[in-house]
Image 1 (cartoon, helix red, strand yellow):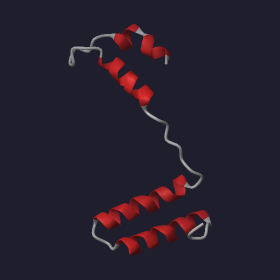
Image 2: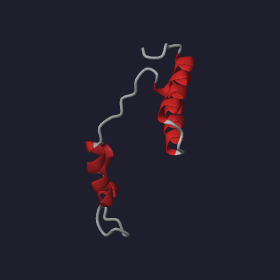
Image 3: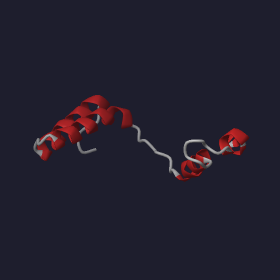
Image 4: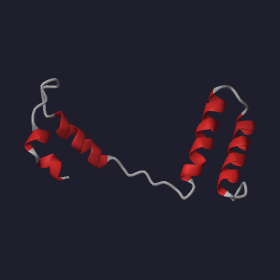
Length: 81
């Protein structure tokens, strides 16, 4: 990215004592992109609720069945497709 070459970006950070932004820039270039599927938005809420329910002690199968039902209703897909 062009900003990585700017003086401000490469300047030593007073708190850390080195050019911390260049370190972040190198790390950022190594992060792989997140690819979302066609129903990611619809399934995100149900998936989050599933994990929370299991962590709260709910039976895994019951929590999973609820998530599958919610996703199916939100997307119009049949469970298991």
